[in-house]
Image (cartoon, rainbow, N blue to C red; front, side):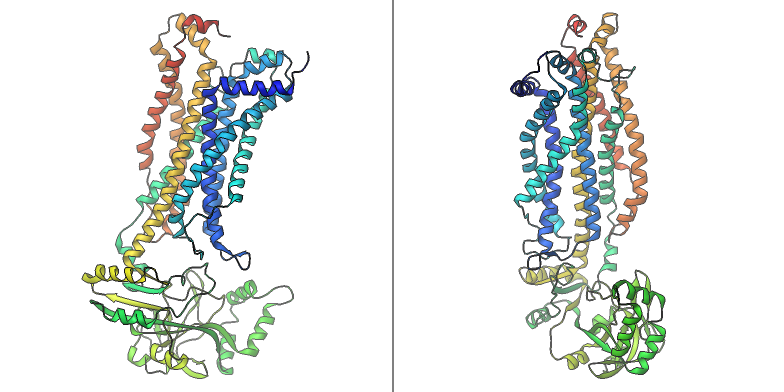
Length: 634
């Protein structure tokens, strides 16, 4: 028999689109949902990368490794979800149209032409669905971006704003189309291979019990993904702890500094941002209990030959220090010994010199003085003959001492005695670290004598409890629109709460989309099964099986999906809860992990209800035809 023409193939594909509007609507919806996931993700990522990019150097200033891992995990979930929905729905609809493809083969349509028809159909669906998905996804990404921008270290002027480009749109569209192509490849191949005789007898690849083969796992996985993500988002929200935890993450009631000082993405940091105008206004405010300035100068600390010999013997001989040098300061042709030899000649270590006021000195931690006490005698320290030395931290809880109490150090040619070893709270120290650095601290008056008049890097402020709200209103208004920012107990609480809510909001949004995907997969699986078995149902009804009995049979079949979904969801949610989620939540300030399956208790009954309603509604539609009509169906 002569093959049909290319024009006829296109006409048949167009006719298939017109005749199967209901099926195509579902397929279009699946592509829209997938594109929404991709476009919202790439809008956010593309905008953040635009802010991170150094326009003068053409390089990225900073990429948060945690954010990268979260982004990759999200992309993996989206790809799996997109594949699941598109593959399952395309597969089910091609199965339901298998007899049509068999008839086409009897009139001369080749396997290649069948594949072409399916591709044309998928392409035209993409032409409609992808632009709609792009528009919705970009809108969702733009809505989420300001919330995400608050917690990502970037330095762009338009921080938290959408930076859309034609490349993001094109990449998202191509990525969505590629997902559709990959997902529909197997169903397309199956349609092309079927023979006319096989197509006439095709029953939708059903098992003996009437359930579609290989679909149980895909449907259960779709439903499980959404429930696990939703439960994880709920756990994050539920783990938000009390205000008492805020005390651990602030050094004073209020801390004022340059807005970019703690931004890891900022290349140049202003360490003299607190000007006299602010300090003058600050001094006029009521309820202030104490003000402490923190100054900073970065440079090299030079040591005497005697002190350097001791540092070489006690510090640079340590294996941890040598490993740090090897990791950061050596390359091909330059060894640890070469670096140590250079240091020996210079007798200097890179580091910061801080100047602190009395209030700031009271915030120092782990104090060990030359007298064996654990507190700083401010009057003695401020005499001008002493410095404090910060311990060198090589791990989250690992410390080594470069100098010790009683040692002598030089700052700008003047000799000082180390009065105490201390730790500077992370929330107020200079947020740029060298692999090996020696940090020394002078009292404020002495610092200004050594380095001359300059403005502080930070100002710490303690306020009477009953005046905190009024003071926060003032400082919020003062810093708004300026280069300054501030932190307080309340701002730390709100920021951390908002950070958790950001993950929860994104998680719930993804869970809802995945939930729709899961329900659509379940609905299509059940409907395809019933269409393929409509003659079987008619025969059972003809021999006396009532409509109510058939509905109960279908409901029992649906509940089988529910049981598998419930068991897998509870198991996976529990494992993720006590492993990855626990580790993530416990690393968030103001969050304390709590094991929770509350979201599942709420959602599983909803899933059960839908699993009951969908087969019932589908069966009602099938029963619109008489028993005789259904018995005549091949």
